[in-house]
Image (cartoon, rainbow, N blue to C red; front, side, top):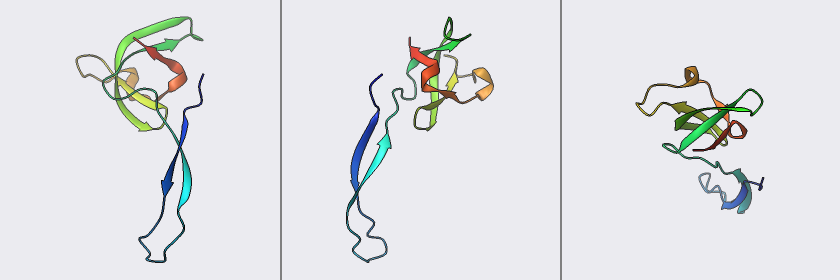
Length: 86
């Protein structure tokens, strides 16, 4: 799997102190809200879904919903390694 990290330039000028620019690392998420995915269960042997990505609460973490908008998996946050494209 490819590394999903990237860099961006940041400078905090809110304090007016002229802080030096710095590079911060961020981790990109593979899926976006409304992407159609399958959820891997049972050690990756069985797939559930398809579901839609409902939210991305933090990088590479997702909540899912059914296509009718109802919450899937009880609102549990699932990791990117548990999902595959539908």
